[in-house]
Image 1 (cartoon, helix red, strand yellow):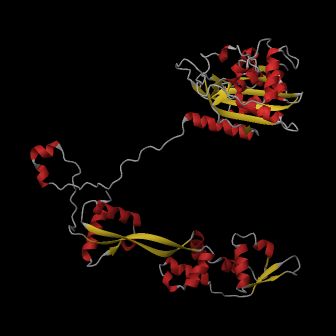
Image 2 (tube, rainbow, N blue to C red; image 1 turned 135 degrees about the vertical axis):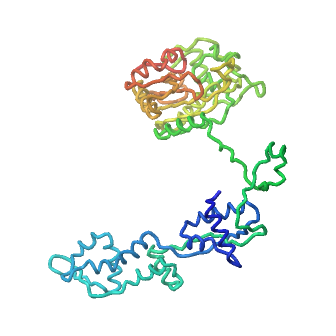
Image 3 (cartoon, rainbow, N blue to C red; image 1 turned 90 degrees about the vertical axis):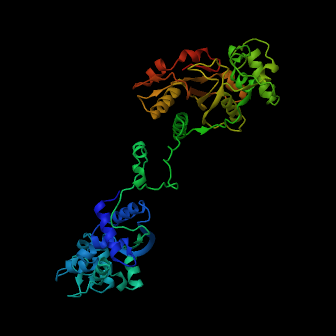
Length: 471
């Protein structure tokens, strides 16, 4: 409810006029802010038909901050003239004044000053008039007094161009008496209470009508899922480090790209049904690069590239089985094979963040699907030291002293890379972690060797056929 005294004053003003009142005029005559009158109008409207208020819009001119300064102190050009003594003033000295640059230009246009460029000691400014009429200030004073109508449109637009005036739209109310007009305010009840019903007093009370058009409480806006926030953070870090995002839009993968291309033997326990989801339709994949498939078969069953292999009977039927990919490293394998087919090798930095699937027993810390983050770097002569350096940079960008899961890391084996066709001497370093898993290791260390040696479980890398740790 607006100020009761202001509301009653407004009602008395409305009572004394036959037509109506403009809320802006009322605010000016009472010396109060217009918004206070608007509040009084809305309070009276809430009481019913006490008054009628029609909203109107009108444009008028107002002085800008600079315009107010000129109305008080004079225009820039007038102040320039008043600052110049009889013996003149060096131009460089005048330009140091706050109003010097603009005032100099305008005063020169008005021929109130002259510039002697050949004066001994440098350019010097002299005034050419003793008395002047500051029309700019006079016009602004008229606007300030509410007499902008005395100015021509051309004059107002010129002042607007100089950013001394601005045209604003003012919304006001035209206030007239309503059908239930009264100068006394009777508070309307907003709630029917049990006591009113029991005593019968409700019959003598006036209730505020319900506003069925009123808006309800706005619901809380939506928020990004925490995983999406973390995913965005990781993605931004990779991009800042110059990595390229790999396409990860194939959830279904063949066992060949998911396992065999990574030099994982076909009898490995991770390929059993209790760890992997196998598809029934289509159950098999049939399109493979045959020469590459043959090299993979040979390195598994017979060895090669400096390796003795696994010495078992590699079967194409196992490699053809379709599965829900168990890691995004299958995508890395495809990208590295594509890289190897280039006419000339070029170093690359890849990353991916996407969903993978495991045939896990669901519990508080395990799901059948989760998101894997993976980084891969391929270049000549990369070592474990390069991996440590990238990990240091990567986790530093995450921010030390945060709760993060630190994942596995290592170097891809030659038995995986050379059958693809990558040149000898090219090594690939990689690391991966998960978004969801709640086993977060709090780290606040200064030495990356401590991070790699103690916080990352490197023993798991030794056990993996995909990676190896040399030096």
